Length: 201
Length: 201
DNA sequence: TACGCAGTTTATCAATCGATAAATAGCACG
DNA sequence: CGTGCTATTTATCGATTGATAAACTGCGTA
Image (spheres, each protein chain N blue to C red):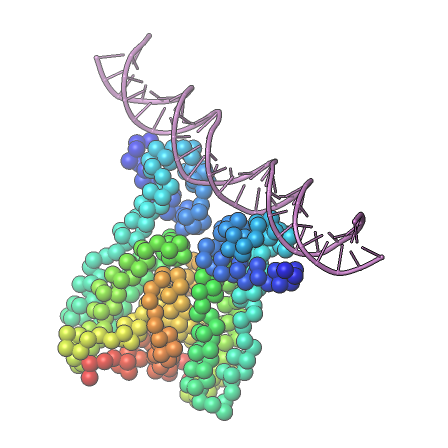
């Protein structure tokens, strides 16, 4: 097999493998699943950590869709529809076996990746959502009345409710069905309660 | 040291230790923290798994407060106050370094404890909350109009928003302050949106 | 003082881990 | 045909792991 194909196959299987067993999963077992010998892995990745690092990039960095940010501020559509489109698409990208479990494993291991990802999410998405909600309710914009910690926490709540569906399904192994309609439910609940917590009066 | 005291001290330290490193934490390192030698652990617990099992019981089983169920159905108090009292107390019991991390570790490891605990939570607490909410809004009781999956999901959303505070703080190592007031915020959002999703009309 | 026993340590085993070096297999090319 | 390179395997090292056996320590007691 060509080196490029082999490397790609190793990474693909490593994603599934580390998502299942965590980063303590053994290289011998991974090689077994690939139908190759364990030392061959070291021909493609200098160390196990290098392979783990590569898995991060593959799963987290590649699945972020820059279009999301444009979608959220596209005022040609009602905010409710924008939020629904975003969270439907976002949940499809994030609520997978690999993403949810690897994210939790990396958090427990103390890697700084989670913080970096969530800082990005908070500043690129949460802020937008609050701003658009304020416009919707004719409140002062963020540059006049700064976004409060509690407004951000309200969005955190929505985000948590959605992400926790993946935790229940892929970490606790509980049956979770109709994720699409649950996402809509959470969004409905959030929009219903949002006016009561917004600042900028 | 007396055997009882020694055993208690081992368990106490093991809780902290496994919460930090997961169940792959090494017995030698645990013994080091206790200031004892590693073989001594095997004088008190036949295997490492037996010690891990004991840690589960210590953290999860002992922290459930049966009074919570009574509190939720005490109609002398307004439902909003009952829910606030419950979630304030519950979050204090659950949102700790040990509880949150051990719960996630055990989920990722595939132990059935999470499912059993959450089934208990769902049937003993979520059902009560929906029932009380229906009474509050003069809707049909659960034995006439069965509680729907979506009603349960709404409570799951509230629960997730609160539990995720612990995930952010103790797994992602993010700063999360004023948990008490955030819990009240989530509760306010939930109660604001609840009428829109309740069944039993 | 010598005995006995509970609590603890020292020494060590066998299995497993990531990693490395050397040998082998297979294919392109002259 | 054979030469050389690339992909892969075999064999193995050194460190670490859970676990066990044997020796030691300190104290109460006859």
